[in-house]
Length: 154
Image 1 (cartoon, helix red, strand yellow):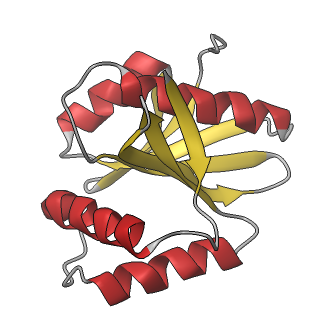
Image 2 (cartoon, helix red, strand yellow):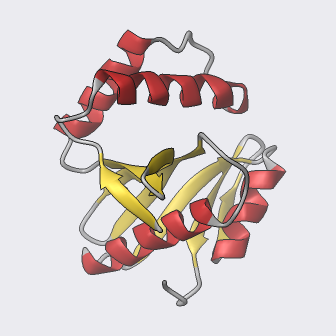
Image 3 (cartoon, one colour):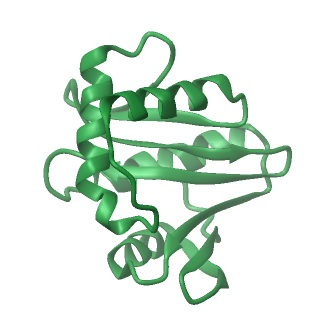
C-alpha cells in the first residue's frame, strides 16, 4: 500500500537525516551546487513548513519511507509540483502513483493548471513526467516547464 505523509513540525531527526541522504544522492542532477548537510536540510524543511504556499510529503510504501514529493507553489489557479525524489528502492510505479496523488489533491484545491520543471538534460525525468501526462509547455536550454495535460486521475 502506498500513501503520502505530510512533512510538518512533527518531523523527527531520523526523517531529516533521511531527507539529507536522499538530497545528497540526487544533487548531481541539480543546477545548484552546495553541500547537503543535516542542518541545511533542517532549515530547508522549516522553510517549507512555514510557507502556506508549499507542502512536502513523504512517500510511504508498506510503512517504509521511500521518497518525497510536494508542491513548490500553490496559487489560486495553478500549482507547481516539485521535490520528486525516489530515495529508496527500485522503480516500481510508486513515484508515478505518488505524483498522481498530488495531481488529485491539486484538483481539490480547484487549481486549473498543474506545472512542474525539469532540467532539459534530464531525459529520464522528462520521460517519467510525460508518461504521467505532462507535456512540455516552455523550453529553454537548461530548463523546461511541463504542464499536466492528461485528465486521467488515480
